[in-house]
Length: 356
Ligand SMILES: Cc1ncc(COP(=O)(O)O)c(C=O)c1O
Image 1 (cartoon, rainbow, N blue to C red):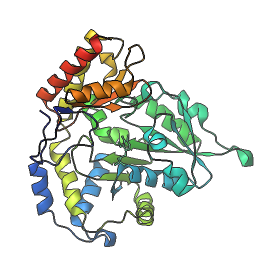
Image 2: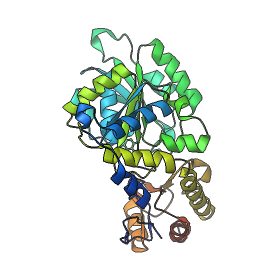
Image 3: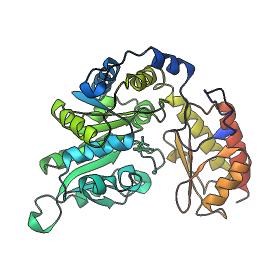
């Protein structure tokens, strides 16, 4: 069954809509209750301070800033590096371009362009072919490259560190900053064994989410230099994200760092098991090698299914999933999906898809 830590039935046999659905465990709730707190707008919340410095350390940076959402952490990251009228570039499936509702343009006057990337995978030619440096008064200048790792709409794709380094070297030469949308960097770290700091150090700023696979109810952390984080603190307040006795939420994040990082490999193993079974009966829908972490993208292009129809058919059988595009359905494994829920989802999808 889908595990619901609230003690209330979730109503789904398996809820694979998103890894944002997780409910705090009893142990996490206990940690939240116990947390020492203070007014964080005055910099007086010790639990927030602990979370910020711990995450900064993990990612190889000087300082951190707690943000209410991943979107705000990304928007702060972009704001720090890009002047109004300059541009950010990212792949065309990137969350910052597709799913933050134009916030960079609306809030910060930032223009954007994108490169195409198969399954969101970073290839150096993408950003480097697009980057516009020293364009003079006639063209928009590129101030920032955003990389997403793992890649959500790409299907949990892990970005190759060597390619990141290649892009970093060229961007540094051009004076272009780099921001990592690391909402699921934890998954990349656990899947590859690459230390978080090895990824983190290649970027000027990094955002990570505590509220996805890690299972905290809310919260993200932005990291960078002390100077950048001091500026981000001002912009966070300006964006309306100055929070008060928020150590109660930071405590959930600290608990997640202690207890919910290494277990992400269970999510990866379940996603892989599902993909292997579905790939066996319908190899045109998913190739198991494409499943690198906790996300499975089903490509319905060669089937009779429209995404919304497959989502409905699965829902009627107790499995909730997401229509992620004109031919794609996404399934996401997380803390609240166990082996039995995985087996149930596997049975439903192998049945539905083997009939093509
Ligand atoms: C890759 C990525 N970045 C950023 C975010 C934004 O996080 P939030 O929903 O907390 O704003 C998400 C959310 O799904 C995401 O998948």
